[in-house]
Length: 317
Image (spheres, rainbow, N blue to C red):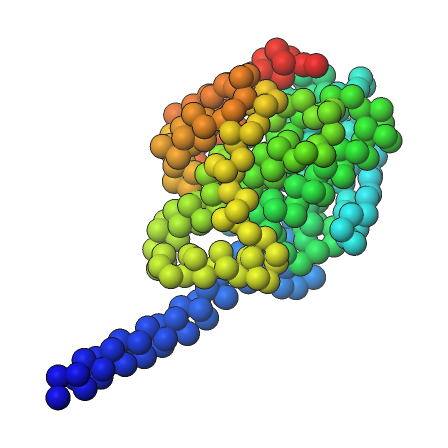
């Protein structure tokens, strides 16, 4: 009799597990579609991603003013890569140095205007881009830098040939930071890439997504890993394999880390681990006491801008 009771218990447990996974998979798909898939032509256009957020709107308005003030220096640019039409704007300020600004999830190139001023002051041209599936660019999925970083390398080749650029820097915010790390550690990364600046970089997308789920009071297990699997199987982006912490030790170019002590998504202890693991001999870390994730400049503009100006000038090719 006892073996049948045990079998019955096992069947009930397995049945409950299957039912739970069916239920949580539906949640994971809804979260994935909302966060990382361009589910309609109207999604992720050249508009503010969070118009109800006062901080976000302030950044957006400030950035758009920068774009308007420098419109006379702008040229629209376009490349085709991986079968996708990708669009950007190149701002001519003279010389042969350029920064490519890489925004985070949901953001178009207009968002990147906000981060351009310190680079202009440092004597660089500025390229802002609509990442795949954002703004005017083709695409359906955000792959957390796995495919975006190959687009980035194509942009580097383009501005090197088109504008005679001989020194390129990357400025990555959140997911944009992952693209920057993957790009500079590629074997075919052009030699003109001379340094990177990272704000709010995460050790892995799984880690920062977990923190996000905790923050909005949603179930972490198994939804978090189910979303990671959907990124791999639906978009072709293996975020476990391409986690920044696995590549940061291979970075050899100068690298400036900008981290916030109030960041609840790229938490300080993980940020410190990224810096400690980084393989570059020319690395610096600047901590900011105030400012949430991706909003450090808004709360510390003078310190933020000066850190970039000093570091890029110090390590100019």
